[in-house]
Length: 427
Image 1 (cartoon, rainbow, N blue to C red):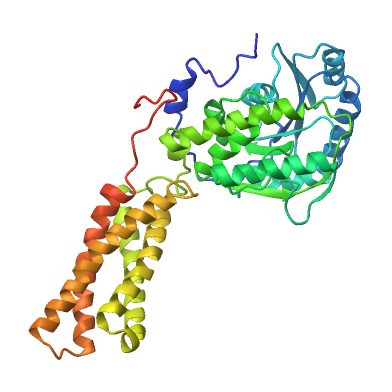
Image 2: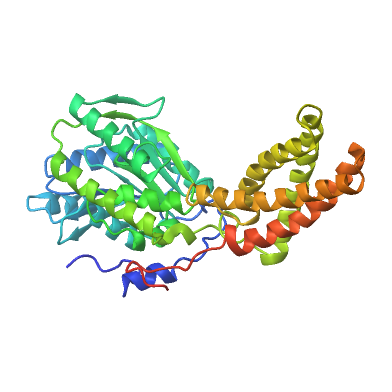
C-alpha cells in the first residue's frame, strides 16, 4: 500500500481545487531552530550496490558544508533486492537519515510520498548515483531558504555547466528539452536533471496537481510552477553520466511524450488549474482589491500618457498628426498592457500573455478611435489649430480613454475564467 500521508488527499481532485489559494509572501526560512531546514530525498529502486556509499558521501558533504540542520530520506519504491535492508541500517547508524518504503514503483511516486510527509521548510532530491557534483547543493537551496525563489533546479544545458556523458544521452536530453520549449513554451532549460528543490509551502499546492508518478513527474511539476508564475531558480551543475544507469530510455521517452501531449491538451482546453495559483503580491489580484487596482492602473496610465505625448510630439513633424498619434498610441498600448498585466492585475509568467496582448490591441483600437476622433473634431471646428491645442485635446481624450481601458481590462482583457477540476467541470 503506497504511503498515505499525502497532505490528507481524501479526494485528490477536490483538494487540488480547494488548495488554489494565494501562497504567503516569500520570506526567509527560520534557521535558528533544531528541526531540519532541508530534507534531501534519495529515490531508489534496486540500488543495493550504490546506496550505502552514495548516502554516506551525501551525509558527509552536508555535515561539512551545510550550515543548518538537515535530513536525508531514502525513498525505496518497491525494491526487490537488499536495498530496504541497507536503507534501514543507514537510518539506524546516521542520526540525520531515515527511510520509507513504498509498495509500488515510480520515481515521482517516491518523491511525492517523501515530500508529502516531510515538515522541513525546504525539500530537495538527488539521484542515488550522485552524477551531479554536490558542491552545487548549497547554491541550489540557498535561494529557497532566503525567500528569493520557489523552486530550484540543476541544469546541464546552461552556460557554466560541465557535462560528461555519451553522445546518445546528450542528443536525447537536448531533443527532449527542445521539444518542451517548442510544444509547451517552457522557459526552464533542463527538465530532467535529478537535482531539484522546492519550498514546502509551494510543494503543498503543487503536488496534488501533478498526475504523473514516473519520470515525467519533474517536467509536469515545473510546467505547473512556471504557468502559475512561481519563481524558478536555475543552477549550472557539473554532471558525470553514470554508465550503470538503470533508466530505460525508450520507455521513459514514450512516457514523456504521453505526458507532453496530456499537458498540451490541458493547456489548450484551459484546464491546467495552476493558472490561478499565485503568491500574494506576486500573482492574482493585488491586495486591496479594486482600490489598489485603480491606484496602480492610474500610475501606469500616467506614465503611458506622458510617453504617448512625448512620442506624438517627436513623430508629428515627420508623420503628421494622425499618423503620429496612431504610432505613438500603438507603442504605448503594448507597453501599457504588459505593465498592467504584471503590476495592476498581478499576472506573471507566459500563460495567456499573447491572448492578453491581442485583447489589449482591441482596446488600443477603441482608444485610437477616441483620440483620433477628438483630433478630427478639433480640426473640423478649428482647421488651423496649434500643436498646443492638439495636445490639450489629446490629454482630455486620454483621460476618457484611460477610464475605458480600465473597465475593459478588468471586465474582459484580464478577466479570470472559471476554475475547473481535472474532469473539466466548472468548480
